[in-house]
Length: 183
Image (cartoon, rainbow, N blue to C red):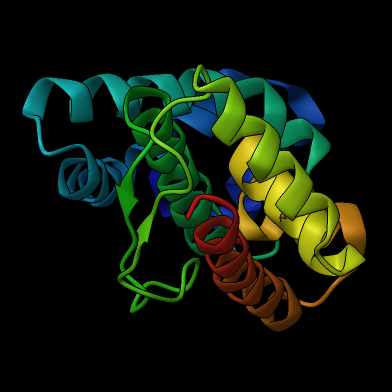
């Protein structure tokens, strides 16, 4: 009987009753989609399976704090961000596919190899401080705080288009500044 409920009905029931059965049914509808997404990013079956379970465990309680109008698209974005955060934790270098709605180029996001090169890190900090404020805020939130584009939009009230532009222009400006300083 619960299988016939629409996504929004299940979500509302879960929020009203806190009965995890509602959320379990809702989430299980999208496990194949999430597994495929996680596999695409993580490139490992076991890591993808773990990610699907981690996302479930995290969202089970967190979703109570969100007003979700379209569960499927919200879940997709949250899952994609989860995978990107896992990749960032492992690698300082991430290839970004801009055909996906969260990022906008196939550049490699790479400012410095390691923070332990103190001179380069100080130069990076100096270059960041010279950025226009919106670029500086967006760059710091994205690279150092590992926030998604949507998280940055929420924190700053900048539009998604502006955040993408600030990060793209900020990366370009940082690259130019670093090239000058490191010569």
